[in-house]
Length: 216
Image 1 (cartoon, rainbow, N blue to C red):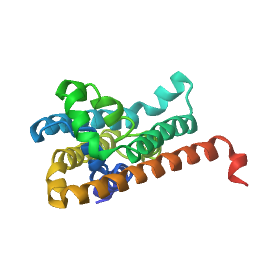
Image 2: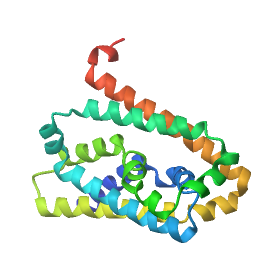
Image 3: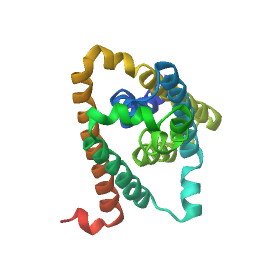
Image 4: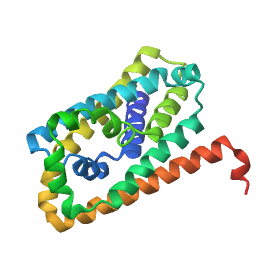
């Protein structure tokens, strides 16, 4: 029973920090030039990459950061700035011309090259998600079976990746249900929230890296 609770705790934590159904409209904005079938292909690719990021972060994240001499606060600051800039860019896009511009300059291969960066990192599994996965690994109970603990983490990451695929692959259906105006409102709101998340991640990195700021 404790292992089941641990599984749902890890899944719930990662699902909440990623919020795939909230980010789906950001994904839609970035893949506006694609058909539903092509968008599903990119969604599957992003989901696979996201699972890889979660798995690596959970099992080797701390080691990788230490190897490159990068601290968690630095990761949060840099990643938060990237996320904030992406949100700001989307917020100020001209959506009336966006569709025409995308059709003339983008295709499946062009978007496929963006599947890992920026669609997976940092927009889907950004610095907040990576830091969360590393924290979950650090707090893993070492008193029980280590293999079982690893299987729980892999299972939670797989379920989160499946949720990402479901949300991203079906976002066009949600957009059709909302209509053009409703989709634009949700897209603008998602962009604003993405900007806020980026600022929050950056602020967390600053306060963690420079404790003096947290005392002000």
